[in-house]
Length: 229
Length: 388
Image 1: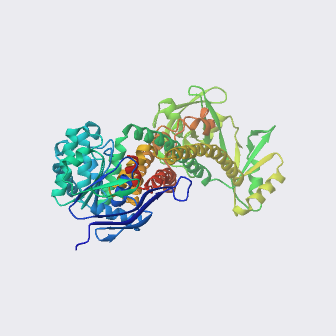
Image 2: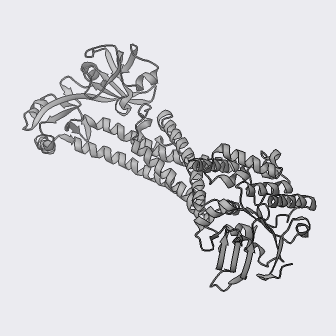
Image 3: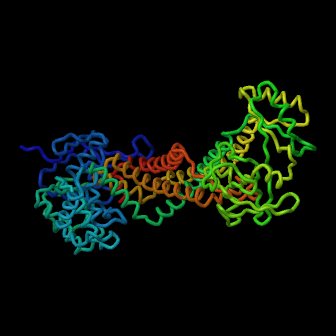
């Protein structure tokens, strides 16, 4: 049997360790995510969804436990290697778009390629290709402030796709969108899965569960996984 | 290589986002650098002028005093001093001041039939010595009287009679401090204008065989002729040094003000990142930027602002000091400029001075930009996700 793309074992995440306000958010979680899978991570606010997502996306390290990703044991890697790994394999769509103000859509998408040793021409080609995938190519020269909420989220998705990651992590990607725009974004995630990517979305938006090509639903409550639906 | 260019490109675009703020910062920093550079250029130019002034001095001067005033010294003293052991040569000098009421300036008149040592003429209409109706002059008199080479220069003697002279030579402006107010007449004409009788001189310049013995020879002259005052070149040099270091002292205050301004600006930069800046760093890290990428980006931001300001400040200081003649600094630095004809500083600064300005203006600013960025860059990118 092939090794899963992501394997998390006994993941614990504690904040403010050793202080009076110490808080354990994740309690010995075990998760396996296979290749080309769409995983929905559900749970109420404060249940630990975002924290789990940051660990699966290599944005943070677990306090204890092991995380294997793309066949590498990454849970104890130093920041430098983790960033390089994330740059190569993982794309992140943040909650609230998290675009960089004052820049055009093009510059926001290109920002993800800046640390890579690519020529201007290569960056331009990749940005335009990613923008076309999410149907925002006609708005590339517009500043972020001139875009609608749906367009901003498309830019955020394009920025995530521009590096051609294997794993896509999204935190509440439809949180601030109306149902029509949310459907467009869900369609984009479906497209990603069809293109062979592994998609992990944390949300409590019922529209995602209705419209997305979900393979697995993981329910998290009080930092512990509930039996799968 | 592409990576560095991409980061530099992002840094410039990033700066242009907050155009107004960055322009204001560049303007303020340019003014601070310009003031500091003006101070450096001005002191450098003055020091250079002083070097010219002091370079061809004789070892000793002998002056005769009466009631504390300088009075003419008789020819007979020359022979008496010339025989003192250690004295090489005694050169009598004719000079004095001339108040020119139309311009309100004071000129220095020197009587000499040849060009004094160390001075160069820019233009000359004659090849040899001066006739009694000819003058060499610095740029002060021609400028204040709108006259020039080949034209007439009128001087009123001590009895009130007007004498006219032809300007046959103009000094090069290489050392304006020395020649700007200078008018050189033939010895007979100088006597007439200054009211010095035949066989009398303003003072005597004494050259000695061994410069190390100048003090000893000076003491001998002092003992032999109690009515005279002996000034050594060392004393004059220390007077000049005291003068320039006093003024240099004032400049130290100026420089300190500039340094404080640098520090305040640096502190403002170092005092922390705004919420947006912190969030941006978090996003950049989240999308794959290393800490070093963030720091390089901030380095370029700081370098672009500080280098732009430094270059603009240096150009502004150069124009202020050498083109506009330092109107903001001159009043308290050249105290006698009210009396002397207006005096123009000559461009003179060392590469080391420019380097010092660049180091003081650029390095602290970049450091003040990078330190808070480093603090922001080491924070966990997951925070951006957690905090939205």
